[in-house]
Length: 116
Length: 116
Image (cartoon, rainbow over all chains, first blue to last red; front, side, top):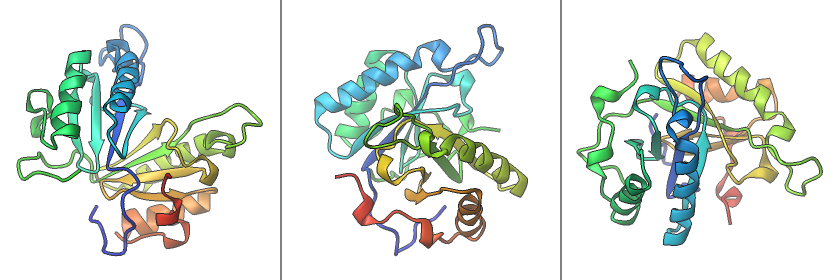
């Protein structure tokens, strides 16, 4: 929803939410945790700290409803969604998006990937 | 961080993250879950569904680092933080923010409440 002129400044410059939802083994949608998101979340948090990026917070989130495309994360306030399957993917996202202020386009979810 | 003209449209019109972190009893910072956030998250999700608000998603989040002020939630993309202690607080936030597009100012965290 739109921001208002009276809104306070953002608490975080970039707020990452890594889906760590786990469904039972064999569930038809699968889940991000079953695809390794918990370890990737830990890595993301550690790498962001190593990079010394100001105002970046990395959080666990419950099911983000993009299960089939997981492991997924979303970066707010810009609301950009990524699929990160490996540590190299995480590095690419941190480097392209958080350090350079651009997009890791290879890993982005697109309009067609939005929830139905 | 700034949006770019090439960014896809947002997947959700309003994405709520309710801190459900739980610290051990007696921890000096306390925690949102110890202050009842899990039940409030369930209520928020159910009420948002009842209100039939399009494009609203309510998620659990890990520690949002505003423990002393909890139970807290944040609404993105606008990045507005609220303290919600009761179901009535949740109703006020949903009504003022999500339905009316304004702010539940009484419950908002302000600049002074930002992480140090």
